Length: 185
Image (cartoon, rainbow, N blue to C red):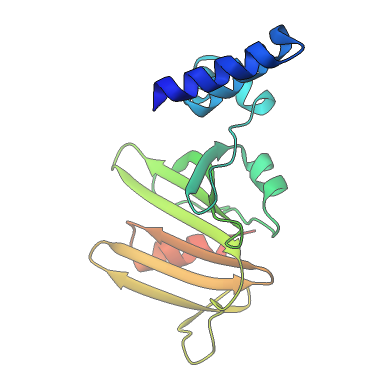
């Protein structure tokens, strides 16, 4: 299979009028497809802003690490960030996940405490049928109905604010997670 692809690309280059330009375009395309572009972006600081990773094929998930500013540009909804973080949490990364054309994007803010190895994940997406009804609500966050669930592993809080659905999950007690959720701006 690989030999057939190489032969086909060689034929395209051979038959083109401008072999040098066609060869360069084919080489760059092959490099990106094989993932060398992603490796290159890890080696050269700042290259991800100039050479973004291509979107995945339709139906496959694509997760890219971006800056908060880039995530705000990509998302079609407001992104909220906390002003309060429990423990020694600090921002670890911002990721944008695309799951096909119709699903839009999910913005994921990850916070990590190296001292306790605890983490908090804040997922935000375009609000839809996820809205919390008053009958499902057991909390109010940002003036909206919210739902909190707790277990031995931590707490999860969900709510919609305008066009944004927010889900916060973390390994902290319920009260600290509620305080974090209420600090979102």
